[in-house]
Image 1 (cartoon, one colour):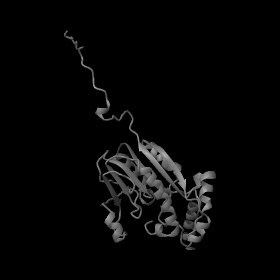
Image 2: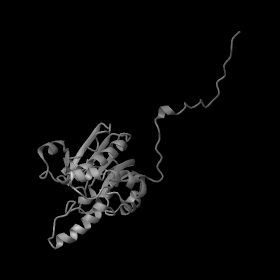
Image 3: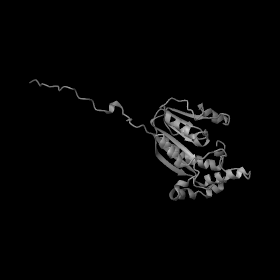
Image 4: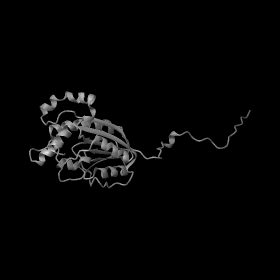
Length: 246
């Protein structure tokens, strides 16, 4: 994925995702935010938390510039953070390249604070790009030609991801689809099909090549309290009499 995003189609995808991420994370407040994977995308650039980190599973495939930005390296199926310690997690195409995406989501739920948010970007199998990817996998079996998307990607449908999140106690706040242009790598043809983005978003939104999800961790029976200074001072238990001297 690190190399594919440098292609014309990859840049088209990254531009759309960066716009969505900047719009969402700018209003997420807290202390600790973590981006898991896709080091070529600065998903936390617009966020204002004091502690923002970039994590990866492999350092060997990264360029020197990308490796400098990485703060931690670990297995995404076993996050090295205590429970209820992070306020925001970004997963840009992370679940497509993990051996067990459901385990990764369980770890995300564990380390997020109550009312913490997770933002997920993923390729949509029910799209023109997804259909070409499935067809290419069959053709590669017969060694006919290489695929359009990265060969080792395992696409997860939007509705399946929503079911996983709901089972883990998340509430989906935002669900969007984008990138409706056909699966081509030519910059010229991508520009010619530009008009499909507005048309697709209006008439067939669920068939976008990528989807974007923002979910909140809900904890039943928990109520977040505001600062103590917002509450009115309590009155004295006993009435106080005031005598005016003449």
